[in-house]
Image (cartoon, rainbow, N blue to C red):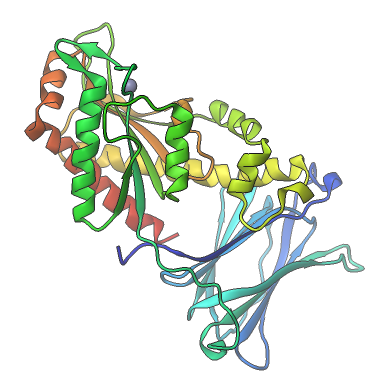
Length: 373
Ligand SMILES: [Zn+2]
């Protein structure tokens, strides 16, 4: 997929003083200046606290993205730069401010570091950007090959675990068929697609998440068919992780092995647990927002196609399979096996294709939106 965001490269850096944890950070100023050689631009953030941040570059419509733990910001100075076009600031009100620097050309992060506090008690976070062009051949730019938008489709249940069983149908069979058909649809659109299972086997929920991680997925979709006592209930719904459930994620990820997976380039043995839990929290918020955004897109597409949905189709739950902290994940109940009409609809390839088409269009829209942070 041409239009998708790719990480040129991705740094997650974390520096913290434990006594700064409880106090809030304000971005007092952002100063931007080109160096005389015109290939380097320095960005300096004046901060009241030395807090967590992550910084990375997206090469599609080149942008530098900086996430800073901060609660407010003040107006910053006007600037002129050969590399930076403009700045967009998004304060989600939850303690992280995202700054997106639109770039005039492809650039890479040469350095990022904190300067020690000056005599006005201001901490300075410095990011040096270098435009790629003039350093060609001189500096190793660590550019990764472009990776197509990658989706892992999870066919719910399997093997010993049949899921819902109603009439002559088993949930595990319908989810497997749907997963394979969806893969075909997405393959044809140029996505990279993986299945957690392609036959009738049992796979643990943890393993399903691990498969998505292994393939470095941009999106994880778990397919299910619901079943309830009330026969009349029918329609699709989509679940994302709830806040409450998400807190357990952070706790769970205190395990060293997971940390190493998550934070590229940081030696987890040298950073304490508190640091990691905050860093994970930053990452998790982003993932949660992205999952919700996908869910909303799905609901929109379902309505557009006139496929039946529950009254509040986007719901929150603590499904274990959704707990990847860094991969946007959704669980879709395609319909109700307990409803005769849904059961018939979903067990028929032709009618099933309708909901899968809507789902694949939702993926298109989402993938495009992710390339435009
Ligand atoms: Zn299920």
